[in-house]
Structures are given as structure tokens and as C-alpha cells.
Length: 189
Image (cartoon, rainbow, N blue to C red; front, top):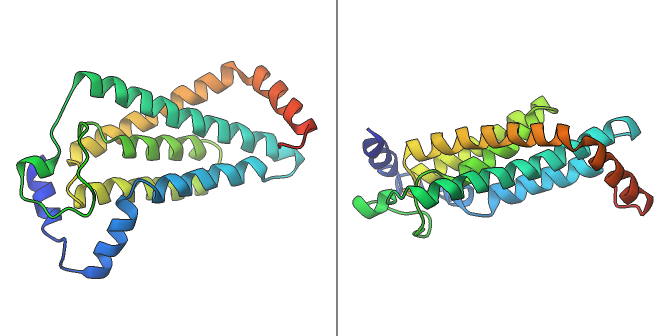
């Protein structure tokens, strides 16, 4: 079933040029990560005196979620290797040919980790980031570089990573508060 979905979706490549152009942008290694990073940067510097610290906690949590997601994917990649869909099927690629394991989808893990971390505090913004993460994962299946189960597993890993980051942030809250207070004296916050 996994293979059939990739082949079916990828069969649409080349039929609607503007859609392919959008997918080429979304599937890239830069579009979603840059947007997510800009959201975190904006959160760090936004808000009044009361909400600014909470936004900075969200930024730190999102950053940790991305790190945890990458760590969990790396652990799985060290133990499980799955060929990319284009290796076993004649697909039209909209992306370069990655050589690492298809399972799990690191991009989706990162996207969902960031979205979940932001969603905990900012529901609307988090939903927007979920839509971006979903689009990133869908584009990777459409482009022939991941199977749907790679993306679903990546999403689950990202969500788990975000809750790991939320838990860690609760533990280090006093240290983080002091650190932010020091940096705010030299105008970094």
C-alpha cells in the first residue's frame, strides 16, 4: 500500500506545471525550515513585557524540539535503513536523490516538532505550522523521496520530541529565566 500511494501520487508530476512548481518549493530543504526559523525569531522578540518571556520559552522549546527530533531520527537511522522510493520505482523526482534512509522522514519530524512546540502556547500559529509541516511531508511523498509511513512516523517523532522539549523546559525554567534576564540587560531580548 505504501508503495502504491507513492507511485500514484508521483504519477501526477508533470500534469499541472504550477502545482509542480509549488511542490518543488515546498519539498526543498530550505522553505519550511527558514519559515519555521523566522517564526521562532519573531516570537523571541515579540510581545509586551508580560508575554515576551512566554514567547521566549516557546522559541527555546521549539529549538529543543527540532534538536530532539533530529536526535531521535539519527538513532533510528543508525539501526534501520530503508531505500528511498525512487530506488525501487521509476518515479519523476522534483528533488535531488538523497542517499540516507527514507525511514523516518527527518523533515517531517522537524516540522511537526516545531509545530507542536509552538502549538502548546500559540494555537493559531501552531496550526499554521502544522499545515506547513503537513505540506512539507506531502510534498516529499509527491516528489518521490519518502513513503507515507516514513512521513507519518516522522510526524509522530516530531510530536514526541516537542513534548520531550516541553518537559525539559519545565525542568530548566529557573536557569532559563536567569539566562534571559542576563541577556536582556545587554539587549539581546
